[in-house]
Length: 260
Image 1: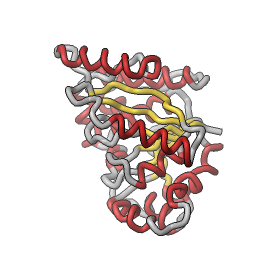
Image 2: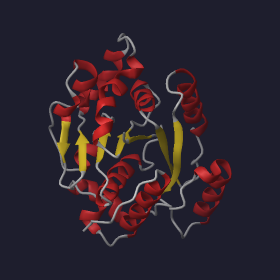
Image 3: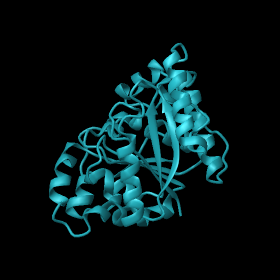
């Protein structure tokens, strides 16, 4: 059975989708069969991998009972597949409110997929609403991206309280996979200070690799590409390659890099 990792932070702009796409690509290049589930109504993971105007989508899986396989697309990267999203997912939270077991909808739908993949990465929306709760209930663990900025820790207590609540009531197996510092600028003393603060707070849960602030990482999605296809020699590409290695080692996986 594969490992399902939900990438969550209710703050926007911290690198959730960038991490979902480029960690997924890295793992795939390390010979790990991966699925990215785009649970964000903004559908940035979907467009960031080159898909537009897709139907059916994860909305149809959650609300209309569509089979998950009908929404999964093969990407241009061998071993990497995507469960697509679109703007209709905005309505899912309202439509699911009266559904029995509404917090379990995603888990019920993707449970049968776990045997097909080494890793399933869920790109959660920037909120702590019902869609994010679904990603936490469906996941084995949580990867938390934190931007290296002044308000880095702001709101994290709410996220951690939500995780603890899910552990108590809906998913006792849920753990913190790791905390990933993103958008790190070596020129700023603030970045160093935030790193030390995050390390003190999370200890060994913090990944050794830190994702740098890198313009290539910001540009790649606008071309519908991962960082390796866009600029394989960039600092961002090297960082996500190392992150994938760290994630694999933590989960007892091995593979030989087959990337471009």
